[in-house]
Image (cartoon, rainbow, N blue to C red):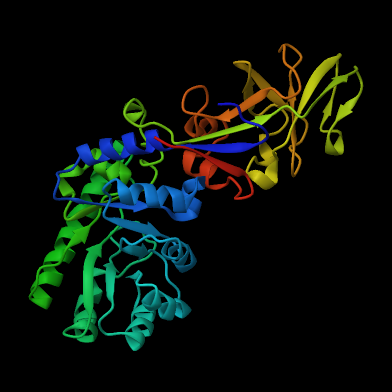
Length: 362
């Protein structure tokens, strides 16, 4: 396939393979919640969600209510968990049949003023120290909730499930979640469904799968551990094109603030992608490189808002040739993250929605 301009290419075959691998780590009774927040981790949330809906996932999760509404408006029927609802979201949550994460008494009291029957997930903080109730809140929760609400799931979130050096910490989180669950069930005199594991949790603590597991980054091809690289295939590739080639003489400068001054004659390529697209300004001045004709071309000068410059002095290429920024082989988002002291999540989710998305279907 030939690509023109800057494009994100989304490979649904790889997405399906990743889903199959994740399913293989749990039993058939365990539901799969697909996390499609942050524009589907930089991909295309609606098309990703509709494809996953057809391929046997059970739930979706997004961060904010507008993300859930977009999926509903595009025909997604499966349950959708809103991970971080705000006080003024509940009318829309009920209208669009979304399921909120209830994580504090402030949010709980606002929610039950709107509905005593709408389903929700109740979150407990077990050590990540972000959102969630504590075990000490259970008695008050019982006083507020008993007999007039629809708790669909209890859940929590592991903070270091990818790091086996932190196994003791993760095990303590799991033990605390077990204690909380038992106390909730004893207090309310009923059995609750539960979900705890994220992608790394599925890989490293699959015995605690409970009724459902959540997977985000794993669906998109990254497992937070090199040993899973052979099983997970990056779904998203990012390519661009050489717009123009310049020959730079010794002493001439390139880009804003004369970020690069040539100490010898060289050749540069201008690429139509910049920091407004997610290629950070800090990536300039040779910090990273992209691939042209299978050769690494390093950045020159400062990254501009809508374009960047690459050193192609030793590459035989022409205007119109492809530039590979991210793909599933030569340079993954994980590789790029390692070179820039960040993680694949940040690389992917920084990619602007203005970049054209192209779907490679099965």
